Amino acid sequence: MAADIRRATTADLDGIVACSSALFAEDAGTRDPALNVNWPRERGPSWFAAALEDPGRLVMVAEDDGRVVGHLTGALTGPTSMRPVTVATLGSIYVRPTYRGRGIGSGLVAEFRAWAGGHGAQYAGVTAYASNEAAVRFYRRHGFAMRSVVLEATI
Image (cartoon, rainbow, N blue to C red; front, side, top):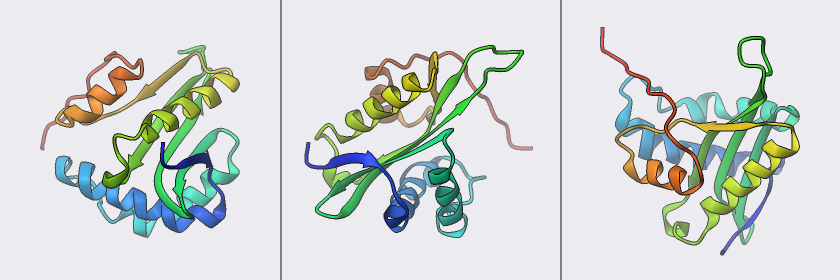
């Protein structure tokens, strides 16, 4: 692996926002016409800063030579009366294209799962666009299986 994986700090915010912007442009921006592709630049700094302060959320970075080359976000929910277990949701993950294939994404997911388990989560979930076959394969390699499908229609 060519990067160090660690918990993010406020000093990483610019790099996280840059990675999130790249993720939106590369993935959601090409697959979801209802998505605001400017969200990372417009709202990301305050959203990620709040996540860093929230013990129920996780922000990790992959860093190489002082540069953020990837990130992962996660959050805990539950238990609730309807679903009486704690669930960890992997919100986003991104590794810059030149760093892919080096195990960085796998390292980020491993840290996420360790964090989730350490906080009592019994399940982990992630959402991926159905047309993003590479992401679906990646998540399946890491133990995620399809449990539900979200269908949308244009009104």
